[in-house]
Length: 143
Image (cartoon, rainbow, N blue to C red; front, side, top):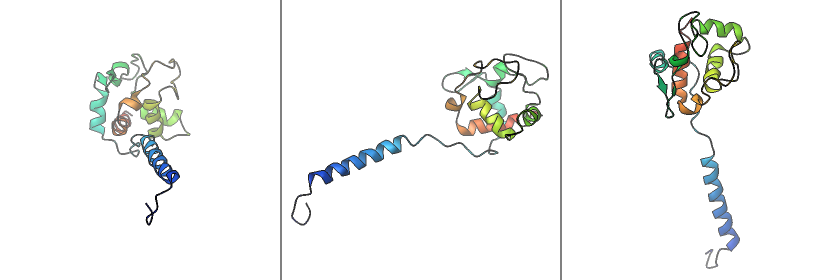
């Protein structure tokens, strides 16, 4: 009621509609945001790299498919010297951006000689942004 008069029905409906719209927008506002580049922990990244499985879907861990030894190819390319190779292969991006993209969107830039679609595609969904940054921090040490 407004000063003794009933509130028009359309105002009640507008209020309900706005409340519902606010809830929908809040639910669709995206998940967690990516942690800023350079915020990864090398030791944590190394521990993640060395795990055989990662994430809630038991995806293969990095070490399952990637060697850290020069010239040793498992399923994916060796990651020995990845930081230096990334710098020379992707001059338009920073090394950090390239490595991050390679983890969260592995088919964005497939290494020559390897087929697209081999690497598990959902690490970006299964790992937190901090875990991805930790992996990147560790990979940057593989010079």
